[in-house]
Image (cartoon, rainbow, N blue to C red; front, side, top):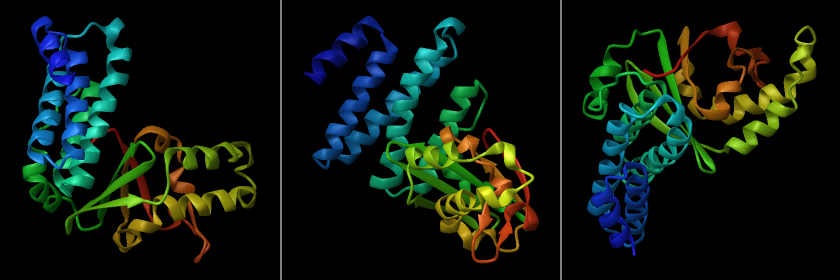
Length: 238
């Protein structure tokens, strides 16, 4: 069935449906342990989407980007969790951001990630988040290297915490401390060892994580807010 659909969409040059079929082919190949075939399918789908993004009309871009993001997310999960290749997964995360914001990026970041990390200053840490289906990944990037972590939280968990956050009560922060502590535990505690001695933390946000007030997150053990120990900056991509 997939082969027939793939052949049809190739003949008709229908890029988005073809990329979605390639995603399904990749999923199927993973289930049967054919990882080389899966990688080939995912990579071809991403390349097709990137070429199409450069020519797609502005009034059609929203629907296209929503569908394309699902393909990129699946590829990120494949490289991160199946192939255990954190650098390749990071490169694809960056490519998805470049497509979303119509900005250039280096699709070769995965092969040069170590060199990229070595260029980061000794007091700086970059945290890049990727919100996937049912889980969130984060890469901690510093001059010491790159490490990837799967967080014990989903987008729905973060959204529930944010819904309880009273942004009008900033003059009485204790009313929000429980939520701020839980978000710290979920989003920052797993990368805590990377935070030590870092004066500048740059957050590359994604999805619901974009709405998290990182500067206000609180470590329940010390009672200190992030902004008390770190300067916080934000970026759309590396």
